[in-house]
Length: 134
Image 1 (tube, one colour):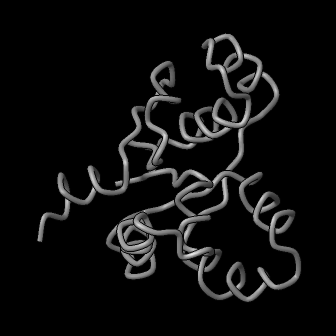
Image 2: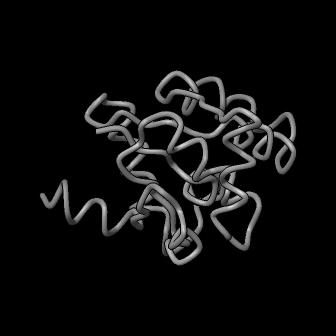
């Protein structure tokens, strides 16, 4: 199953944010084990580097990028996504990248922000309980 992992899930792992870390980390672990075909939007990588700087490089090079595809959306699709009426531009970019690259779900803690997305969103906990209940 192809899923796009929203930036907030990745930030949960980088920062070990509680109480979200365990579920978010398990989603990334499923990607590392190739149980899940994960992808992150191209701009998520830039946002991680912008937020954390050079200390984020080992995480990006060793823990994230070898295990997920980095995807994007082109200008016409971004313009179309803006017409979906999503209130947050960054979420529209995430949704456009997910749709353009065949994601089944967007995994995000902010599922309400993706109500107008062409790709449905699930929280990490909802995804895990639905598809990996053990």
